[in-house]
Amino acid sequence: MADSDRPQRLPRPVYERELLRLQVELVKLQEWVRAEGRRVVVVFEGRDAAGKGSAIKRVTEHLNPRVARIAALPVPTERERTQWYFQRYVAHLPAAGEIVLFDRSWYNRAGVEHVMGFCTEEEHRRFLDQCPVFERLLVDDGILLRKYWFSVSDTVQEQRFRNRLGDPTRRWKLSAMDLESITHWEEYSRAKDEMFTHTDTPEAPWYVVESDDKRAARINMIAHLLSTVPYHDVPEPPLELPPRPLSTGYRRPPRDRQTHVPDHAADLTR
Image (cartoon, rainbow, N blue to C red):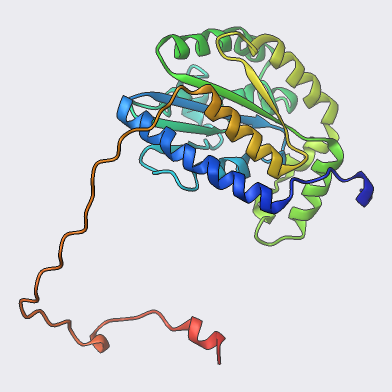
């Protein structure tokens, strides 16, 4: 990709300033969810390398993991394959005062399972019929459901794949299945269009996040999420550090009786 063809990125200083502001608001949202006993589900879907994982990381960066947790389910077990399709996802839904972010979700059946032939045509059709009903039940029960589709162009996706191949800290993000998405680009596009036709409903609409610019995608997604939830500031209980009590004669055991990790940091400065 030529430099002139690359999407213009949101400047880092602007991005970091706004991200911090939004993350402060996310903490307020978290406290409102906890105090009010609300339940929030956020679904992150999209093509491989579209930026879902990095967006989830920014959302949860400063949140309490006891309140906000990530559900990233592995391949179903043989037992789970015999269950009602939505059953294993139901087990990860939030209780009162919790936020669950699905890093991919029940929509696997409409995407990779359908395109790669991991489910039958009948299973795919049944999913498209049942999914709107399933989500309507969630919403009717009071769950705040938000669904985000991260959209990335084919050229940017391919460049991100190449970057991951050469980065030992991100190589794990690539699998043979991910690379198959290049050769099945149009099939995934048709599957996504069909999925939207059936599941973009008034009760649980899809929100598309343009993500060729990851910085802008994160900012746009978080700002939108905050704008759709009627949260408010929850008064914080007054906290004050107590005075440290006087010593009663405690003596720490000699350090040489304990096993310490080697001082690798000191070696770096020698």
